[in-house]
Image 1 (cartoon, protein in one colour):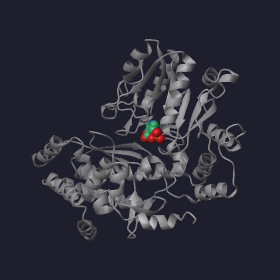
Image 2 (tube, helix red, strand yellow; image 1 turned 90 degrees about the vertical axis):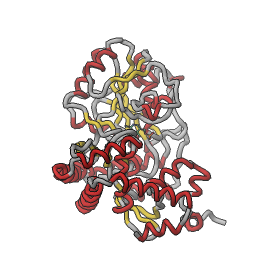
Image 3 (cartoon, protein in one colour; image 1 turned 60 degrees about the vertical axis):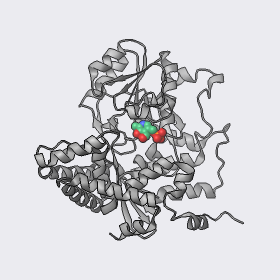
Image 4 (cartoon, helix red, strand yellow; image 1 turned 180 degrees about the horizontal axis):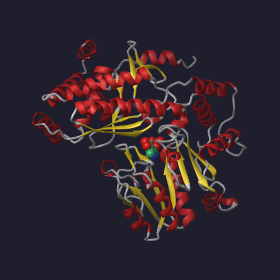
Length: 473
Ligand SMILES: Cc1ncc(COP(=O)(O)O)c(C=O)c1O
């Protein structure tokens, strides 16, 4: 009998988190249930998803900034269907990979900066691993610098460059030679570079964890200091790339940043086929792939798969055609203006920052006595809890998917598809205002705990009755 995908889905859907818990990740299943994210989606288009009951959800997470063009973009879908219909070979390995060469050329044309060659990967973290190896090989040095709160992926090399303790705990020992510098602090950077053993400084132009922006000029000066001390600069544009911040790369908005490598991934995939790319300066490439017997000294079986290359090419085509970066600038400005306009009314709405459609909304300690107790109680219980107080009702009451910006942070992060329109912005702003109103009521903590408690109870009972009661409420 033929493999029947629709029949499989019809058979398997609707079982809640039980199968996830049994076969994949029980802890994650519990988290999903507790925060009310244990929903199954059956269709997706653009910035929206639908569940089996036909409820529409607004996606302000975009699969961790993967779906910059929205889900199931017709250009990407058609290109992938075409590739399958053409019965193209994939991963012949010893061949001339036409599609990879075209994608490399298209990326170079957009990134510029005299980066000569492209190494393809299947993920962001693989791109960082490649950059680590290339930097060590090209400089003959062991040292790697990263910033406090940096996030570059979770494989062993990348996690050695992670600036958040929560991701490091339990995984020591790390790659030798990795040292942290203070975020946005040139003196801390120069002190480390001056030791003369640094192969590369790896940096996100805007940090994903917390949505932290550097001071104007920091990146250019960091670039200059790396050059001065013989270290390479690696810009991690895995999250910020492909228009997220309003230009193709985030460093396109900076003067004087001269990276030796740029790492991209996430949105190049079109949300369909994993793909990443490391754009590398010629001298770094030559030093690594230094002879015929080292021609593929760094490689990976899947790294130039046909569907991945087609995904990347079709994403770039669609990206140009729909002015995704321009829309990110316009919709980002509307969102940030709308959020900032709420600040005078909501004392815990401390800061709204970001660029394009990479936005952080930070809560801060209230001044008024009535709210202080609620703030203190929530933080005393769990440093991760307060921002969840926004995430949970955004989902449960307004069907909006978004996330906190990292562990122990009072920051909500907004990274919607770049194709959102004004009605999506209004949907979010209206919802966020009503969530802020609830959060500014003195008994807000009790309300949040009641929600989490109810969800926990529901998950413990595994009761579909409680779940349907929630749907009705
Ligand atoms: C800036 C940055 N670098 C690297 C990575 C790792 O990418 P991946 O999850 O594809 O390994 C991420 C993922 O979130 C990221 O945000």
